[in-house]
Length: 508
Image 1 (cartoon, rainbow, N blue to C red):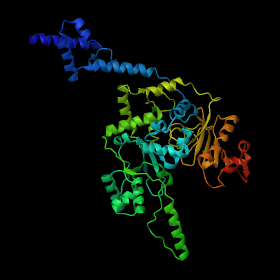
Image 2 (cartoon, helix red, strand yellow):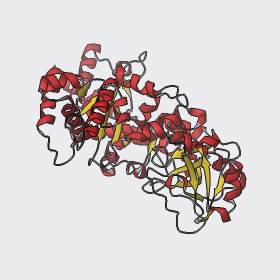
Image 3 (cartoon, helix red, strand yellow):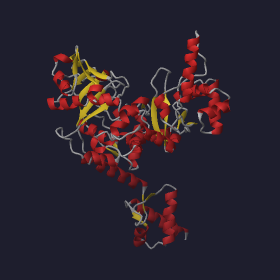
Image 4 (cartoon, rainbow, N blue to C red):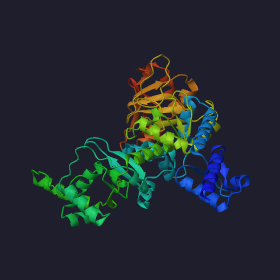
């Protein structure tokens, strides 16, 4: 009896080794084995790793294969999929990213959550989110909508600030994703007595208002708010209202100023009464529930964020985000995802490095959209730091230039650009003072690009009645001596000595 079992196992094993996919019915049609014995044998070998179970459609029976056959099938399938990849020009990919991230007018989002799904984990200057990121993707954006989204509980935000003078960097993440992220704590973090006391209260009591924390910690409300902002800069606390970020860190009012006269005392008391009567909704503060994921899990999560942000990723795109792991780590993770069928690999975009990975949905969309027509494509204004911008210093693509040397363009707070069909037409530097045209833009394209300059006044509002936009140079030459002068005059600019100026009051 034992000899027969050994013989049957040997026959079954040989049959599996010589066939790609084998089902239980295939075995029983070939050999007169008992069904229960054959099924048990297949399950045992699967548990021991000697077979691989293939799960197909629910209506179809299970199939098994030898691990060596499975690896060969995988290699053959991946080879076929890679050969099917069609390479597109860099401009087409740049236009695809605008659509993927909802910047393109034909693909704008229906709500903020849809935008943040693409930009989760993207760290940008705090004021830039409402100035240039959300309004350009959601034309009907209102500040209250971000407060409502923060208060709903699905999304939260955190800041990171290296010094007191630096602009706070802000990121939106899903609350459920915090466990997959490590806290962005700065090196050498030191908390004073007030910050430590506030941390202890939040750990024991949960989300609280600043006044409640002041009572629990036996501190002045001003000292509590100052401590909260210290914790905010280290990415340790958040608030259920985004309006806290808009207003910025409040001045401390628990320290009496040095007053030298009775008039100054009366003015201080009058201003103090006015400050007390002007109460803003502050929301509740809470600790961020950061996780401690292992390196592999953290790298996998970061790879997913990069894929969701661009659809197609390569080394150059990963280098645009300093928080990403090294490319060699991401490459290993993405290669495993390819074997699991989560991504496809191929040479999708010209100009990027050879190892490129794409979400199947993104690869399909990229191949379905034809090369955008320059004649019908809209002209799009975007900030240089926008994650959808692939041009400039440290970005994935080089700017077109008439000479052999590529044009340098710094991705910084005061710089913008205008693109059409995925190609940049006009560089806007120093908040409009310097304009640079890029080939092969024609006069009509430049006129449309210059017409978008007035949007800078809307995106950078000011209460000053003298709010204006001044252009000093056009292609490194004084604006009044260039063809750009006539283009600017057509959209309302007036000559202002050696510059051209557009006043917000006149334009509105």
